[in-house]
Length: 154
Image (cartoon, rainbow, N blue to C red; front, top):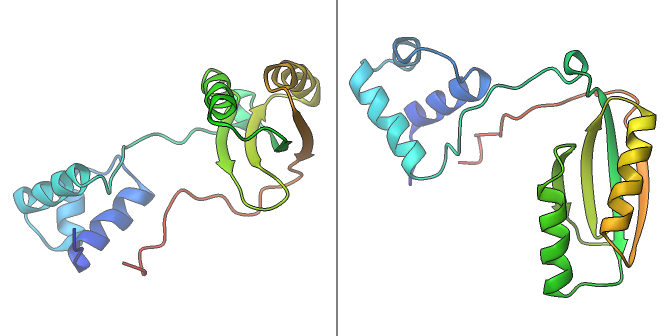
């Protein structure tokens, strides 16, 4: 799908605040409501807009400790990956999982209330993923966190 300037403006607005009313979006983009709504629907149907969510404050919900787990494994077969993925899917503390190139095979971002909670989580997950080496890094400060993708490459 080819995006024009109006589509990019719509995406920028929705990335900053998905709760904006259609009339506000249309007015900001310079369209009437119906054509604006059609564009949003097309962006959703094309998969460009995956979903609209509320971003919550981790600290206020007692999940303010971010831990990055680096996992190295000697096992790279499809069965291991399937079991690993299934195990992580059921753990609400796991916020993100990336398969990487280089020395680290997988990087996880985990949200927990405290170091003690992470220790319990670590014990649980280390038993679920055999043949692996896990190292952890605690985030001391979040300098930048965004969910907004850059749109100038489109």
